[in-house]
Each structure stands twice: as structure tokens, then as C-alpha cells.
Image 1 (cartoon, rainbow, N blue to C red):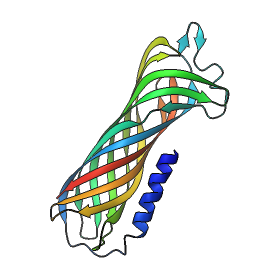
Image 2: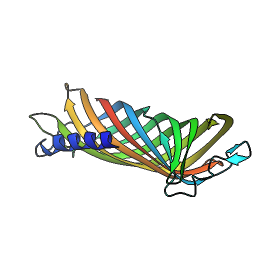
Image 3: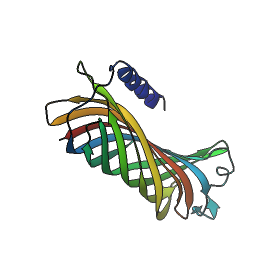
Image 4: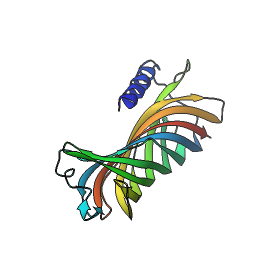
Length: 222
């Protein structure tokens, strides 16, 4: 989390110094591609049915305060097709994919090891605003509403094979900001941050609230 906060602080300083906005005359359809490094966070709202030698992985954990699944850094990619309007507003349809490995289940009363993978596919309708700065990189902000499809595969827990899988489709939203720099008349390049959130994923064996911090590079072709 400290690394994420540092990244946010750096981006905020860049945006603060980017200058005032001016009208942009360029209007066009565009496509963008954004590979990303992700830092997922899953808060458990229930944990059961993961039986290991007649004992439950949740014993001594789910009764504690704020049980969470600790996850490793992962990778993601987003692609968007949209239109940039004369008012500097962009609207677009975006699809994305993210994957990350599970590491531990933790709460204030215990820790359990868990080996698994969580994959998330998303679709969003986005609205963004691009600021302009003729002297250097310029900021953008955006938000989106859509859906997230999650697939979880728990291979083992505390060293014992489990082999449980589950999936769920839920409502999701995202917000983000960053900076971009026109490379030429047809290509913009950017560095950005986004937070993706979805609630009440039910996999049978667990229920979660799921958030993803994402640091990404973007190429936008007009």
C-alpha cells in the first residue's frame, strides 16, 4: 500500500503542475491499449466450505476483525474504443482483464496459507476529461460504470489440495487519473492510475468485496 501511495503522490504533483486547461480542437474516434501492474485487495465478508482434514480454513480467521485475502502483484490489460469530443470530453467502451495469485487469508485472530488464482474480466462505459498543456504532459481524469466477471481457482490451503473453483458476475465501477503527452497528431502516450471496485462476489466457498489498484501505461491512437 505504501508503494501505491507513493505513486499517487508523484502523479498528483505532476497533475498539480500541468497548467490550466484550454479548448482542444481535435475530435476523433480513437482506440487505446493499456498494459498494467495491479495490486488487488479482497475483503472477506464470509469464509466457509474450505474443508481441510475435517477442519475449516476459516476457523480462527473469519471470526477476527476484517478478514482479508492477501494477494500478490498481478498483471492486467485494458482496451477501449471511444470518441473524443471538441469539449475535451472522451466517452468510450472498455474491456479489461486482470489476474493475480492468492497468498494468505488473514485476520486479527489468525493466518492461513492459500494457493489460488483470481481472474477478473471487466466491461465499462467510461467518461473522461483531457486537460491540455502546451508546455508538457497534461492531466486527465475519468470514471466508468459496468460489470466484472470473476473466476477463482483455489488449488490448495495450508498445503492440502482443495481444488475448488467458482465464478460470479457483479456490478463494478472505476475511477482514475493520470497524465498524457501527444507524441504526434495521431498518437498520445500516458501514465495513469485507476481503482476498480466490485462488491458482493459470491463464490460458494467465500464472499468478498474486491478492489484493484492499477498503475498503467496507455497508448491512444486517433
